[in-house]
Image 1 (tube, rainbow, N blue to C red):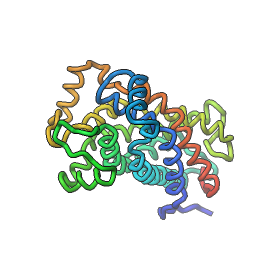
Image 2 (image 1 turned 180 degrees about the horizontal axis):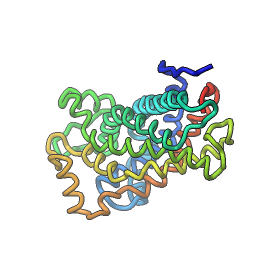
Image 3 (image 1 turned 90 degrees about the vertical axis):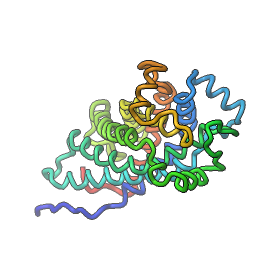
Length: 295
């Protein structure tokens, strides 16, 4: 019987994406706060971590976790859910039993990355502002009581445009990152472990973790976009240092040279393996409980 593609969304991937995101936030938030502070103030990762622990305590490593728990949970839900549905629809046009090619996985990743940027941009804007603020802001910006207060204050004072500050760089990072993440995840399973698809049916959990970690490294090929995004999103609303993206690119190069576009890379790349291993393993284990109807 000829198969007909179904465009009605399945919600397995959306639910599994939330679980994966929460796993990633718990593992990755300590790395992320160090990365953000390095991108904005410089220094070494070790000194930044030591200063943070001495001045703000151990649990400051998870400072600003509420926005990513909510926002990345939603972002992952949408991106992973859309990716799964795109795979299901594209697979329905393949021959019976034919697995998705890496090019098809890349196409699904592009679709997922595009959708994800609309969620992650305002979430990361709020998270970054909470992570970098001190007791006094000499730039004239308000001191936010927490993530919700930050979100509402920005919305009140600067509208939707204010929440989406840094959107273009976020979009570039997500388009490149999610395409690489999903493609290299499958590539790793096929080339490292000789499987056809990275699922719990074909690979054990530890092998999925390895594939997820390798894919995590691939995600950060667009790291300079993340640096520029963080600089723009941490910039003052009241007295901005950067008038526009071009100015941010120019001043970053003027101050630090090419190295300026890779500030915070060490904690980021150290974070990439464990975080994405957690995200993709959490996702795949949850998906295995639901089951897939495509290859």
